[in-house]
Length: 377
Ligand code: 5GP
Image 1 (cartoon, rainbow, N blue to C red):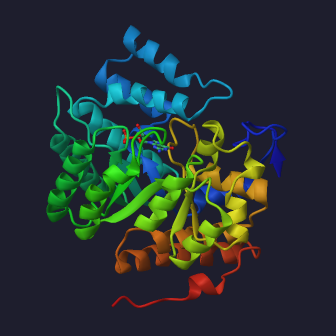
Image 2 (image 1 turned 120 degrees about the horizontal axis):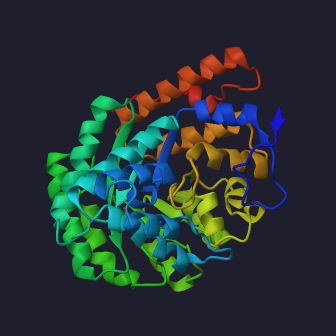
């Protein structure tokens, strides 16, 4: 049944109606989020709650900041998007703000039926906190969240390519250190930040060290058409690729051969102007070329979306069926930085959902992919 409510596709011209049945299915679907930047994932309601903790509800400072956050210029580019983060960074610059923000982000993903979440965040130092304090605070929140939600939450400390290489070395050293205390939470390193800044090559030693210590690498790659950097990144290697917008068909063959999943973030790419419009999004080509790919939100707060919405966009724009949405989730489990046992458990949860759906709706079929059960060695 189509209704005339505001569509998750409202940023796409000509689309104003929602298929409520599909949306309800997608909201119920147990989901896996693999690309979520902590400070980008606070939606406007959570920002208000956070501001209440940090500033008190109606301060002039907050009203000024929230106006800045809500304004999204038409035709914005990546640089404009990066400026937006400073709004939330002001709110998470204290331990209490960072704690509350982490709790709110985890809560909001849980509300959207996300059962496995990999958060990434750049450890920051300021007058209130060192980078160590920052990581400790986030890790403690994630630990506490375990008793509250059935969702598994992992952490990928981020290297911001716009910052000096010495900071990336500190981030990796801290991650390796914290890994001993939280081995099942810190699972990898994210390489992100404004792709127009920094030189990838200079960060390679820090990333190599992380890899040597068993940390997985999720690298923002091919977000802009920088051919020499793309080649360098692919040669260096990664476990997952953030965005992959400007990968060529030869790169696709490489991703396929090395089983590197591309983390696709539809709304993010459109609002930040790296993809012209939804129908031209590279996820279509990735699916056609059978390149591993996962659907993610990136910055659900900044881009005003949810993982359910992102799936909905894919169903509307590319005609993905419910079964294909389940398959994409299964693919995300396969590419998660989780242990074999954790992946088995996630598949069991998804399987239970599918069995229930199969009874209700014969359009959902169990494909071989999710009936298959592998044993952990
Ligand atoms: P944080 O690390 O502060 O928790 O999350 C926000 C940060 O993540 C941004 O300042 C930026 O460094 C990084 N980030 C968020 N979204 C994107 C994106 O789409 N592309 C890249 N390259 N970096 C991003």
